[in-house]
Image (cartoon, rainbow, N blue to C red; front, side):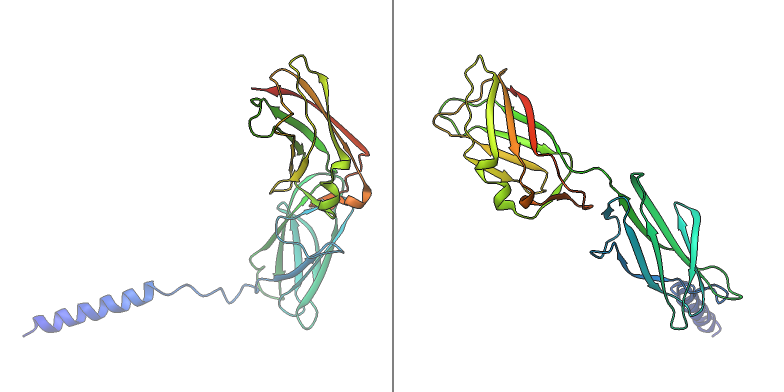
Length: 250
């Protein structure tokens, strides 16, 4: 009659051990509560983790943590500065971007009196000081009376355009031949900013235009400030006339 008792004892022990294994460890009572960022603002808009900012912009970090605690700020692993929370646990800290481009990784910790420093609250920004510009163009040969020929023009980065309709207006786009022994001819009938906002597709006439391998064509773009072209960081496009040359490929 002792076997059922032994079996029951082992079963109870296994249940207890399983219950203990399923519980997460509580934070150390000697460690300060981790701070939290509420908003990160560049003076014109709230930023998300990983967003780009221009050089010379003051970014304000607003957050919360334990009342009357020291908030330490690390940049790329090195202590950069500190601030304190008020009696309600709120804090603000500002940083001004410089001229060095790259990713800046911030980490915020809290340190209350007689407690260990907290875990980190992280946030990254990408400093971009280069304004957008047209980087290149490309053209592919097409068969006569086939689909309308196209030429693509690439910005160096994705852009934000205030007036897309004005940007795509045919008055600001033109294509000429530089050296066209093959007889290439192209009249812009449509300019389209593609999804991703980095590529522009120029479309010619399907019945009269043709692009021949080896010919060189030149794309002209006239900028109107009312188009309001900027990159995601806010750097403004400012080239009055953009000229790009490309060779037609097979």
